[in-house]
Image (cartoon, rainbow, N blue to C red; front, side, top):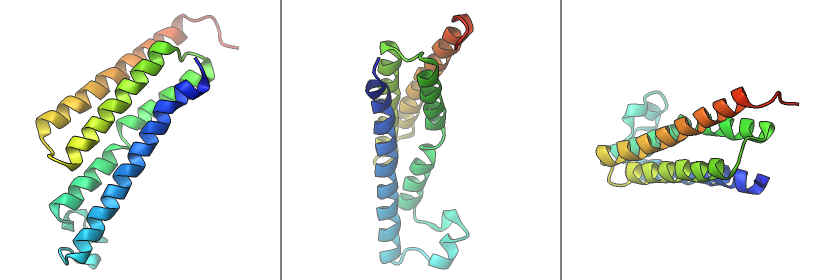
Length: 143
């Protein structure tokens, strides 16, 4: 598997994180412009933001939870040469689940849909980690 194929899902996840950051910035800017928030208060109290801005903030924070485990796994899989076609396919499934989760989170925010997207991503990531761990444990010594 090529390095490009392995890293493309990572680049897509990074792009998603920046898209969510832009969404967060726009939501916060709109809240400030509408006068719905006191600048002094939001500096010390995250809950002072109106619901749409908090929703975007929560979505942005979510991009640094499960995806951190994804980034670490991709780096380790590259270093140990354990990334194959299945790894890339599962990587794309993980990133698609994160995109679905973010889309639901910043739009309708339906908890059932959001949980489904989160659960799919978590299960895919768990499978990736199990496959990686087994490959490392049962592989000949790495040079």
